[in-house]
Image (cartoon, rainbow, N blue to C red; front, side, top):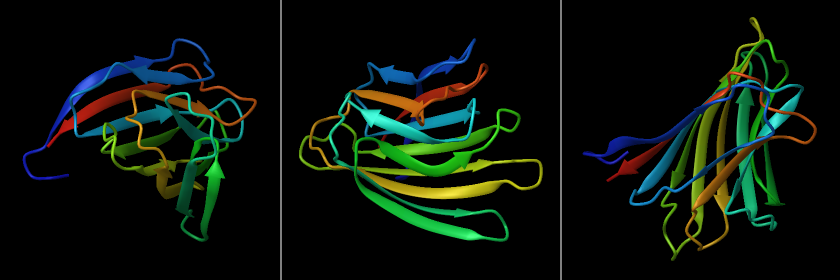
Length: 166
């Protein structure tokens, strides 16, 4: 973060019941967007994002994941969503993520996304580092966060959106 930057709270939501996705809209006037998530999923799945309802195959990702004994790395190109490489296996143990979306309002370059996340599975958790790209010069004006196919975020999952002014 550049010197002198400030985080401005934009929106927060805590789910009162299981929900298939969370969407943030109506944010502008910032350099970058920062999302904090404290959540669990109803079954084993991955954490995903979509910008501006764009279902094109113009998302890519790379991840590094470790659990203290094993390290896994991978990547995907030409996805229809932004994928965070951190699988959560249980509703009992939540996960936490912090996600940066850099230069989200730029109309002259593609977008860069980076995230750090982890899950505690009662001693067998993992941590993940993730970077992604959204190959579009359209400004991002909507962010939909959702778990993989066939599951929901559980009740009491918390999401917060911050704007960063440089």
